[in-house]
Image 1: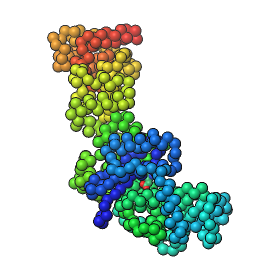
Image 2 (image 1 turned 90 degrees about the vertical axis):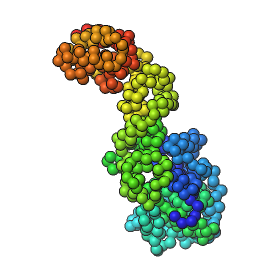
Image 3 (image 1 turned 90 degrees about the horizontal axis):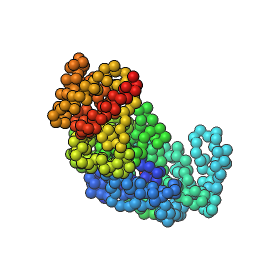
Image 4 (image 1 turned 135 degrees about the vertical axis):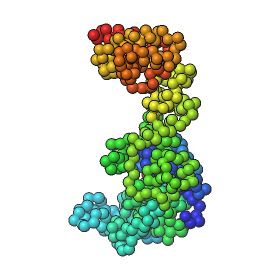
Amino acid sequence: MGDRPVRVRIAPSPTGYFHVGTARTALYNWAFARQHGGKFVLRIEDTDAARNKEESVSGIEAALRWIGAVWDEGPYRQSERGGLYASTLDSLWEAGALYACDCSREAVLARTKRNPTPGYDGYCRRRGLERGPGRALRFAVPDDGVTVVHDLVRGEVEFANSTIEDFVVARSSGEALFVLAVVADDRDMAISHVIRAEEHLPTTPKAVLLWEALNEAAQEVPLPYFAHLPVLVNERRQKISKRRDRVALEDFEALGYLPEAMANYLCLLGWSPPAGGEFFGLDDLVRDFRLEDVNSSPAFFDQVKLTHFNSVYMRELPVAEFTRRVTEWARETEDRLGAACYSGERWEKLAPLVQERARILSEVPGLVEFLFAPGFSMEAASFEKAIARDGLAPAILRETAAGFAAVSSWRAEELRAALERVGERHGRRLGKTQAPVRVATLGRSVGLPLFESLEALGRHETLERIEAALTACGREG
Ligand code: GLU
């Protein structure tokens, strides 16, 4: 890795949401910095999006904290660093690396539309225009030779200079362009490794050219190592995007994914532990992560697998911690059942069963609403299937109610035995006998184990609900 102090950065643009791919990039950068005793810098690339700046920045900070990639320095904001970009432009101009250009977009198009390679044709390169208002600044790319990007993931990637146009580094308004700002910042912040998304690879030769020109024009700063991380794709192998896929980290948080499950899964998109296995924590990542082991091929962001990961993490939490997470999630998302229901004796009885079945926190309310929702009602489709269309349902409900009313103690085993006796009388399996009772009392056909649920619901409420279901059958029939 050379002997430079490790300094890496995450450079999100404030888009109003935090992309899962940026979260992965942040985790890799963070782990790399921790592993090398280096620094992880947060830089907000907010030159374009001026809207709602403060809110966006705090959203970025919250997302990074949530996923566990906490920065050591910053946030720096590009919008506040115009002075550095101006002086960087001055140095390049004085060294003769730039030229002024007053071509309009239309003029360039008219001249170049029949050219075999698209892009600017160098028209102003030898006109010797002075810089000034209304004139953009372009970088004079060497005509021959190649620019090589040394990429720790992809090896040496070569770009023929003849394919790189004389790109704009400052608009005619004088404002610096993104590529210039990034290079100026990476130099100023002594960034040793640029670890970022693959989509930035095509602009990297421009960054290298600028960097080398600045080394001659100003101070010599070693070029950073580059590592371009594989693109994330959906099941149709398309790059995931806000338009067609769920990509906002905030959405996953709201759905009740656990940050540690999310972090683990995201880190697998392009890398896996050398010893095998897929489950690991951030400490393991810090110990084992190697940029050289990152894959270059596209990584499938598979939400089904992510959900499976989450269910595994959920099950492994101590019950008290699971309860804390649900409560916090309900409070944060202002869930309809309210955070207060996840406490007390009834909840504690069911919590371990809920933990087994809910794959994400937002599935918890559906599993316990029979107990905590203010009004109880049977789901129409479940009622139809398990009660209205089953000729035996009224008899089963009536006999079960009688059996339940007679149990000596209101415990799951006794309730089960009572129901089994009803089933035997009618020559029905337990599962089938349960179905109408489940819908009558829990409101739907799937959910928590029936008898434990009824134990929590209590005698009075259970019998009342079975009565109400019988009345409803009467009305239907
Ligand atoms: N601002 C860029 C982004 O949001 C990152 C650029 C970089 O890392 O160099 O993707």
